[in-house]
Every structure is written in structure tokens, then in C-alpha cells.
Length: 422
Image (cartoon, rainbow, N blue to C red; front, side, top):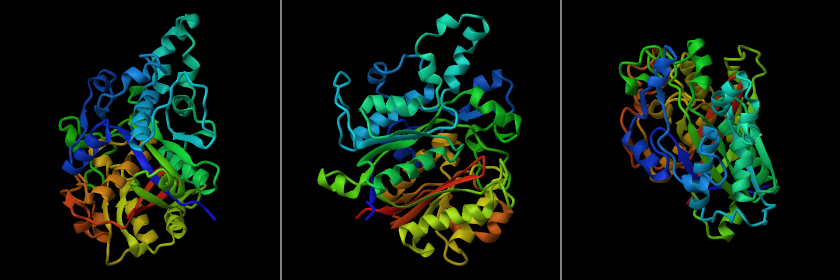
């Protein structure tokens, strides 16, 4: 019999808070973390607004594992991991101990881990000063760096895996963690996603005209998912790390449980039937959502809330249409919002940060505002009840089931169904 999977700890680094308490408060208040970026202006970006994470915590501990100039994505992951681990009721192991945990796994997703560090060290290579790179270069630029450093922090010796599926990376890492728990391979998995704030990460999106083109004069207005006048996404960064474990293991140690992951699915559209490197195969996106519901053994009517991928691009109307198809929505609509309206698009970290946002809303019984959604895109207004797209935070919302999906370049999809723990 497959093990049930629950969430017992969460940690976050984001533009609206780099600890769970601040993040939850900012979500409820509908605070925007988007600001003007002088660095993007200096690099001659068209988009000059971004979601820059708040200063991280635990620097004294992180400095024992990573130099001060280490890769940002690794630093963000470490800070969020420490919070999540302690939130789950565990103690950070003694780094001088030789003990390892064969029932503890790490699965971390990222789109661009290592880019930040490589960009800062590139000049040494170009100038022929390779010997000055030192011993940290490989561990800070390898894509598995975040997972490897988290494993070293905790002494995890079951599985250490890295996931890279573009903007679905964070959510897909959580799905993979569920697989490890469900199958009995691990009792506890530290999972989530991270990505750095860097013009070298964001430049390609600006070149493709995917970043917001007209929000520089009013940064907090720039991220406009589902808006008729949306002109691209606002780049962002950070990390979201969760501790997931089997229900039996969590109960045996008396852990607090935030929510159960009742269903999870990952698939690909194969870049066919309308799908491409940058566009989704809608049928497969719909199937991903439906398969997650099937695994949860619930009907679409049971879903009270959707945390969409919704980026503020031309893909938003198509995504909403796919949700309507997947859940067979006609008259009774669940609430839907976009956490990206507050923090921007954190790429490989988005799925995990937004999963944490979903859990917090379920746990604290509110649905945060979807900022800047008016005027609503005409195609969305035709098919979705606008009253269920919050224009201010709605309190006292008791959600039994919620769903979070992420969709990425390469025509990849990931969906989670979360169940309130009672």
C-alpha cells in the first residue's frame, strides 16, 4: 500500500519575505515585492523591474558551508532549508559528526542554478587567471549544487537528486519527493526549488520580449497576470523548500502537519498538437491536472482554490481555458489567483514558493489578492467568474482541496493536489 505524503515544514526566500512569518503576512496583506532595478538599467534591459529577495537569514551557519561570494541560488536554498527543517521540528545536525540518514532524501529543482556564480567568475577565465578560480568553482556552478549542499547540511544519504524542467522545476521536484515517500524509498524528503536574481539569467527573456515592457515607471503595477494590458512577466528569484514525509512517520514523532499532498502528476506535451518549446500542448496540460485529481481520488467539484502558473503573458488566457477544461468549469468556479502578481516569476523556484503560498492560504483560511488583474483579459472574462478572481484578500475561506500547477518551456507540466489536514 502506498504511503500518504504530508508537509511538515516550510521555508522561503522571496521578494515579500525571507521567512515564513513575513511571507504569510505579506501574502495576506497583498504586498508587492516588485521594485526598480538599477542593475537592469545599467545593462540596458527594456524591463527594469524585478522581484529581488529580501535579505536571507542564517548567514553564520551558511558561511560554514559556502563562501560569502557563493552562488545566490545555493544560498537561498540553504536559508530556506534551515527554516523548513527547524519548522518541521528537526535539529540541524552537527557538521563534525559522521552520522548520515539513509531514510532522508533531497530533491531540489532549478532552472539556472550556478549562472550567477559563473557570471561573476567568468572574467578570471577570460583574463587567463584560471588558477584564481579556487576550489569552489565547480561546486557552485554545477547544476546539482543546491541539492548537494543541502545534503551536506543535513547528512542525507538516501537519495540526492536535481530536477531541471524550466519553470516547472520547483513543482516537479515536489512530485518526485512524493514518489520517494509513497514508494517507501524514503521517510523524509527535503524538496523544492531555487533560482538566483541575475541579469545573466534574465537577459534571454528580455531579448525574447517576454519580460514586462511598460512597468518601469510603476514597478508594483508591472506584474499583471490575467490583465488585458499585461505585457510580459516580471523576473524574480528566491527559494521555496518543504519538508515532506510519510503520514505514519510524521504522526510517530508528533509533528505538526500543514497539509497532505493527495495527488501529484508530471507529464510532457511532446511539443505536438500546438505544443512547442515555448507553448503548451493544451491537451496534455489538461491531462496533467486531471491525473493529479485522479490520484487524489476526488472530483473537480472538490477543488476550492487554484494557484495558477499565470505569468502576465499571452499564455494566461490559454491557461485559464485549460483549467476550465480540466475541471469542467461552467457555473461553480473555485477561487483562482496568481502569486506572481505579488512577487514576479521566480523561474525554477516559482512552483515551490507558490506551493508554500497555497499551503499557507489553506492553513490560515484566506485567499490573497491577485494584484493588477483589472481590466480582466476579455478571453478570461468570457469563461471565468470574475468574482472568483480576488481583487482584495478574502478571509475565512475554508478550503478542503486546492491545486497548484506549473508549466515550463519544453512543454512540461507539473500539478499538485493539496488536502487540508484536519
